[in-house]
Image (cartoon, rainbow, N blue to C red; front, side, top):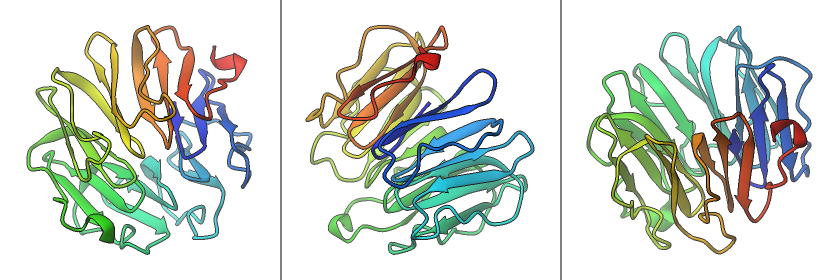
Amino acid sequence: MSAGGFHSCALTTSGSGVCWGSDKYQQTRVPARRFAEISAGGYHSCALTSRGKAVCWGNGHQGQTRVPAGRFTQVSAGDRHTCALKTSGKVACWGDNSFSQAIVPSGRYRQVSAGGRDTCALTRAGKAICWGSDDLYSKQPRVHPGRYKQISTGFVHECAVTKKGRVACWGPNEDGETRVPTGRYTQVAAGFAHSCALKADGEARCWGDNTWGQRRVPGGHFVEISAGFDHSCALGTDGTGICWGSNGTRVPDLLR
């Protein structure tokens, strides 16, 4: 499951993509294909076929749906740009570049995460590298040192999980979005002004802004979690989806 700006997306067990919520730019109208991965952005969505072809739809006014040629192993839709990891380990980004978030540093990576005004990636050694900028928060550290196994880029903050299960978040902390609760986690998701993470037993924790109830986690155990603009989504151990917060929370019946 993937929580975006004002919509959410998920894959069914058969590989069909499903998106719901705001459809202002037709970002919920998924092409009739089978996918291996899906990602909801600000007002656009992207998916990856089993053969590594990236497909994007929705708002493309900044070029975020204009996919370059190549084969990819991962795709990540940000606010107004998109990034994907090539089979070679290089990262390609396209779309809005107002904050240099689409200018990729040279290197080989194993994961990429497109956010609002930043993009982050993990090198093959687990080092976090972020690029792009936000003039409002230019004094914030761009990268928290360490070695990580997973990284997530929010609108103006970032979070990552170390190999030992610790979560580090950096960037602005106006709503407590980088103030991580103690514990060990397997996955982290950075949203607009809140963050969520999963513990090894499947318990979900969210922190930061709660204006729309986006960190008020329902009971249950989950295998995947995603943080959007003002809502959060998670995938249950039984394959059902659930979302909470302001919008994009009405999960289609086929995911229940």
